[in-house]
Length: 256
Image (tube, rainbow, N blue to C red):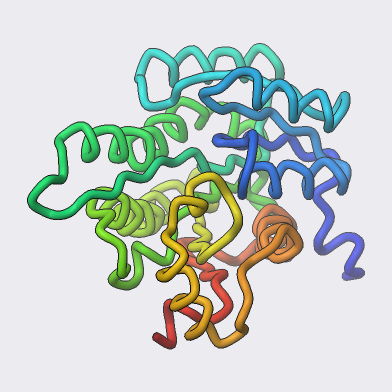
């Protein structure tokens, strides 16, 4: 099979949460530039609507706060009004919270868990009819959960709920993969390292330098790095992946 066929995402309908900036924007641009249509959501309407406008007719913005069950239901219903099938779902929306152990607040736990873990499960559940409609036995629909290397190793930063949530996302990916494959939906995950985003902008300069200094590839991730793995996981090229976690971090988490 030729590369143009094996890695093609042309004509696919893709839903991307947290789709207004950072990794979500990188994924959205990659898919639109390669012939897919995307439905984007994020909590801040102006951000997601601005990106959709920049991407053109292939992009639709549906603002939603996916930390709330009522908003998950509303968003899923809106998606169903725009399309009768979904080929790829990226569960990318996320939040973080940092505080010393003795001061870590309940709100910092609940906010992170609700958006990082709870929304991944229940949005996938709500979109299953559309994912099944977009699937075939030969080419499964895809659910791609965005985890983090912080779910694979012990971070130097005191982000307790974030680390726990991302470890949960990676194991939930395996659970979902086992049980949804029979419905022709393949579930995999990406565990990014340091990519430029609003979330990573809060990392202190000293920690930033230390992490870069021990990263084997000696650089941070960029849009091409994320586009490559995201397109692979949504294309025919990844058809036999199920329950896999692809770490994209320049070697940091597996070598430090």
